[in-house]
Image 1 (spheres, rainbow, N blue to C red):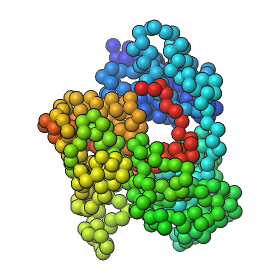
Image 2 (image 1 turned 45 degrees about the horizontal axis):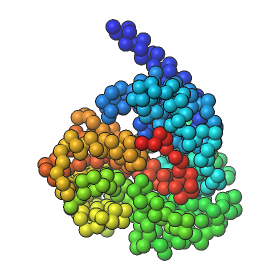
Image 3 (image 1 turned 135 degrees about the horizontal axis):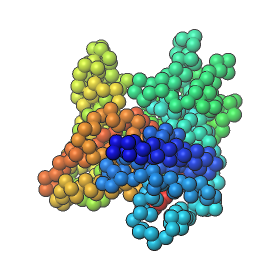
Image 4 (image 1 turned 60 degrees about the vertical axis):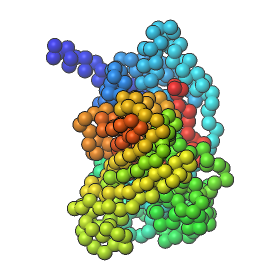
Amino acid sequence: MGKDHFQDWKEREALAESMIPLIGRLYREHNVVTSIYGRSIINRSVIDILKSHKYVRQVEGSALCVRQTFPVIELLSKLNLAPGRIDIGQLASGYEKSEGSQTLEEYVRSQVSELVDGKNGHDHEDKDVVLYGFGRIGRLMARILVERAGGSGLNLRAVVVRKGGAENDLQKRASLLRRDSVHGSFSGTITVDEENNIIYANGVAIQFIYAGSPDSIDYTDYGIKDAIIVDNTGVWRDQEGLSLHLQSKGVSRVLLTAPGKGDLKNVVFGVNHDIINDEDQIVSAASCTTNAITPVLKAICDKFGVENGHVETVHSYTNDQNLIDNYHKGSRRGRSAALNMVITETGAAKAVSKALPQLKGKLTGNAIRVPTPNVSMAILNLNLSKDTSVEELNSYLRDMALYSGLKKQIDYVNSLEVVSSDFVGNRNAGIVDSQATIVDGNRCVLYVWYDNEFGYSCQVNRILQHMTGNHHKTLPVQ
């Protein structure tokens, strides 16, 4: 019995290994991103691919086997496809449910017909991207842009920083990109050209520019034109301050990775990204917490309605806090982040109304910073417009995570053993912990995990793709 099980494993392992070159070819030659129930399998190992299949059992209640998905990826690799996103897991499951009314080839062709023979291709030119700042979000954005170089339509051209003071400044920057205490090692190779201030990451040449202000750079000197500046410093957050970027040659637009002030559009991708128009030169990607809770709140509003509620954020400490007790202009943030839970303010509850106007004035919020370096949790205590049950609410949110237009924003987990570190690197904006859901009539309490660094950075990248017209169609349509 044990031998049979092990033999089955080896056979599935071999099939997953055979999938890797097909997945890579679809991505490199056709710019087709493949996934399994929303989990990307681009540049993933054999074990990662098999674990993605295992995830389906947790959320669907039935297993998905690589024996089902391998023929699908094999068929896709033979088609002349336009750029797009294809969920091979849902294609395989959909075919099983069709009960043989078509051959697998007929079914797959019909489900991806919008992309076959180059249909619905994008003729948008690649867009230059500059990261202004190279902190936690800046370095993760660099990883994401490098990972998808050549296929996303976004070209990471430069990073702007202040001179750090050390003679080996560029080497130190490269080391921070190469190694990360939370997110692990960079997936690939990094080399440094100190003479030209360039870091090469997996062949991508990233020009490092040392500057003291946003309006003091001529990007055209580096061959950069019409670039989108991703300002992840948080220093400038209003129209006036961020407009300084637009005074530099070679810049066309600015994306802020923090809540914008004044009349700036605060965008949560998946919820209100359609408000961005071609005339918008400066846009905010809101905050990590706003991105985590807004998609879930939208889903709840759409089906159950929300009368009012309170959002409590249990947030990992950030660089704004002190490691040991010292002076800080903010209340309580001067106390040691590594030793204390710290009550602080959050504007996330109010910020939700910028993406969901129907919730204006209905939510209160607060935050507790805790001694963990990454991954946070939002507790949504809501009074709904109608009664529901744990089963109904969880089932609805599971379906939203798997089949709706919010499936890149809402993830769903069904385990009694998960803890915060399990969600490091999760690419969704927020993850509903179904085992923690509480319902009493029309009152519910939802627990939503989120990687406040990487999940948020993925949301920023989705806005970038939308701003440049490179956010491709996802198939099959649910």
